[in-house]
Image 1: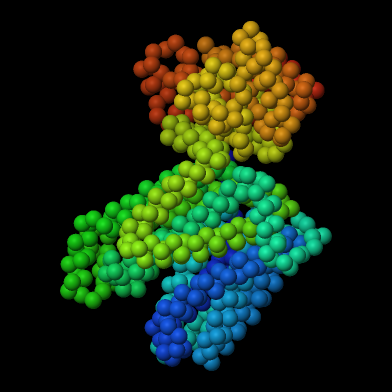
Image 2: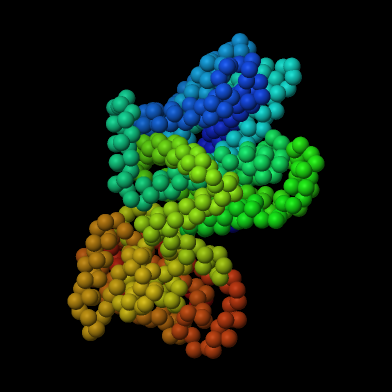
Length: 637
C-alpha cells in the first residue's frame, strides 16, 4: 500500500493548526516590516527627519536583535511549559503588538511602529524554539522530513506573501495605512484562532528553573550543543544557509534596479522565484529521502548552491542581457512583464529558482537531523542556540557585503564570492562529519543506478546498540544497507579491502572496522572484536556479513561463528536482513560475462532489502540467523 504523502498532514489536527499558526506568523512579520520600509522609503518626510537609508537598514537590525537577547530564555520557556499554551501566549502577544502598531499607523507616530518591529522580533524569537521542538513530539520519525518540508514551504510562502501585500497595501491612496493596520490585526486574530486548535504537547522539563541571564544561558546552550558534534555542526550548517541567503537576498533590490533595469515589480519577481524554489525543494525532500531523515541531501543541496550561485554571476556578467540594456536606454525602468520578454533573463531567473530549490534540499534535512539526534529534554534550547547563531551569521553577512562592496566588487561578483565561500564551508563541514558524504554517496547510488525498496526497515532501531547481519552478494551491499538505515552504521569488512588505495580513505571515513582471519592475522582479528564491542558499548549499529566472503553462486554460504563471539561479549539484539536482486550485478562474483551482467538488470534496476524482527541475544546462533536470512531473501537472488 502506498504511504500517505506529506500534504495529508494538513488534514490532521496534530499538524494543521500548528502549520497555519506559524504560516500566519511569518506572513504578519513581513506584512508589517515591508510596509514600514516602503512607507519610510517613499514618504519619509512626513514621518521623520532622519535619513530613510538609516531607518530602512535599522529596521532589519531591530527585528534580529531580540534573537540575540532573548533566544536563550525562549528555549528554556519552551522546555518548561506545554507548547500549545505557550503558542497561544505568543499569539496574544502578537495581537497586542499589532494593536500598538495600529495606533502608530493611525497617529503617524514612528517610534510606536519601531517598537512594533522590536515586538515582532520578540514574537518570532519566542515562537522559534516551540516551532521546531513541536514537530518531533507530534510526528513519527518517517514523517519528519515531510513535516519539516511543508513547514519550510509555508514559512517562505508566508514571507513572500507578506512582502508582496505589505508593499501593495500601504501605498494604496488614500487609505493604505488603514488597510495595512487592519490587515496586520486581522492576520494576528486568525493566528490566535488557529493556535487554539493546537493539541497539547507536554513540557519535556517542567521542573526546569529559568535563568534570566541571557548571556550566561546563551553560552551554556551552545556549549551543551557542542558536546554532540553532529548536532552542533548541523547547527552551524543551518546558520551558514542563513548567511548565504542573507548575503544573496540583500542584493536583490539593487540587482533588480541597476543590473536588470527593473522597477519594484522586478524585485518582487526575484523574491517570488526564489521562494517558489525553496518551497518546491522543501516539499521534494520527502520524496527524495524515501520518508526518512536523509542527510545525504545536504551535500546535494550544497553543490547546487555553489553551482547555481556561480552561474548567476556568469549569467549577470555576460552578454546575456543586451536586450535589457537596449530597452533600458530608452525607458526609465522595466516592469516584471516587460523584463520577461527580454533575452537572457530566463537564465537568471532559472539560477534564482535553482538556488532556492537546492536551498530547500540543504535546510530541511538539517532541521530533521537536529530534531532526531538532539536529546529531547534539550531540543528547544538547542534550537534557541541555533537561532542566536543564525542572527550572528546574518549580521556577519551584512558586514561582509558592506566591506566587499566598499572595496569595489560588483553585485554579480559578490554572488560569485558567496558561491565559492559556500563550497569551502561545505567541504570543511563534510570533512568534519564524514557521515554527510557517506550518506550522499549512498543516496546518489540508489537514485541514479538502482531503485531500492526497503521492506520493514522500521525494525532497524533508531537508537541503542544492535548488530545487523546480512547475506553478502556484491561490493555495493554496504551502500544499499546504509541508504536504508535511519542511522550511521559501522561495517565490519575484510582488512585487504579496507586497505585498498583511494577506497581505503572512504572506509576509514565511514569508521569501518577491518578484520582478518586467525590464519592471516590473529592480532587484527582479536582487535576487530574489541573494536566491535567498543562500538556496541557506545550505542552504535554494527553490520557484519557472517558468510565471511562474497557468494560465488548467488546462494547463501554457511554463517561463521564470529556472530556468536560478538554476542557473547555484547548482549545486544541482532537484526537479520536479506538483499534481493543484487546477484549478477557488475560488482558481484557472477561468472556471466560483463556485457550480459550490464544489460541483464539495466539502468535503475530493482533491488530490495528485507529486514526481520530483532533476535534476542540468548536466541542467537549462526544457524538460526542463517535460516532467518534465507527466509527473508526467498528465491529472489
